[in-house]
Amino acid sequence: MLSSAIGTSTGGLGSYVTNLKHALQRRGHDVTLLRPVERFSIGPFLRTLIYNAQCLRVLGSTTPTIIHSHTYDGSLVPRTGAPFIATLHGVLADEVKYFSKFQDRAWARLLARLEALNCRRADRCTAVSEYSRRIAADMYNLSISDIEVVPACINLDVFEPAKRRPPSKTRRVLFVGRIYHRKGLQVLLRAMAILRDKEVSLWIVGTGPDQPRMKRIVRALGLSEQVRFLDIVPLRELVHCYQTSDVVCIPSLQEGLSIVALEAQACGTPVVGTRVGGLPEAVADRKLLASPGDPYELSAALAHVLYGRYGEGPQWRCREFIEKNFSSWKVSEKMESIYRQVL
Image 1 (tube, rainbow, N blue to C red):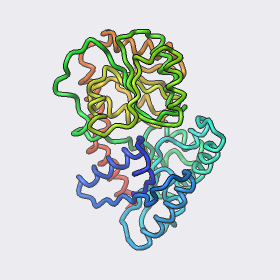
Image 2 (image 1 turned 45 degrees about the vertical axis):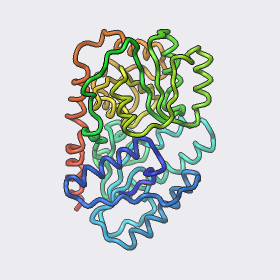
Image 3 (image 1 turned 180 degrees about the horizontal axis):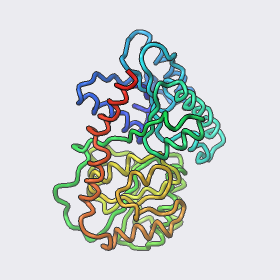
């Protein structure tokens, strides 16, 4: 498996690759994840070139049965010998417009070209959602019939509901993700201001370039006593945050799928999100989806969960939805069948 996200990213891509690796190993396969060797701060395009050079060196001295690349990683590796699988997550060409800086947009366009090249040269492509499948076929000039949907998988032994949750008079909304424009945190902050309930707090797990601006918005909206920034937390603490929150909110402006939605619901916590990209495919109850960029719709969806009008048993409905569609065993079984087809 080829992914430069491992060790340099805390986002959904790194979780997807790691979870799939472990799931395939549990099925008896020998899986080597080629991690990037560089540890210094460089731009994404240069990191990709260095990683591709690393891939060429390592793959030149080994004979894998399958090479499985993610996003644009491995795009410059010659297609000889072992069958080559390319997996699309959020389609990068679809994300370019959400980068605010010109330099970031320029890098993203270059990497999107490598991602398109990777897919065109692969023996088989997969995508994490039906949305990513459609948009990749359109933007990368691929045949949609050549792309198969294989969603992300969740380790249900790690992400599970709390055995007992102590009662609390206060309610908590949780946001988990990289803090930049595409994730829509600014919309959630305005939705919190519309709720205007001192008994509802917002915990924010993650960092990113927009964090200073989000803190200024918190102060301007008078939410300083209700909003807590936790930065990045260890896995065990993240699971605890999911288990003890009343609702997880994903106010994204664009999403390929959403690992956060899957992790939260595996822990039995309902998700309020937006009708964008592949996010509706990852949410058990689509009545909890709002229009992207609309804080009023988002606050109404949050209120539906927070104030007891959501109904009985949401914890187990969320969990069952994940068990049925995103368990490690089922997803790895589907990926294994694709490996067998290309062999």
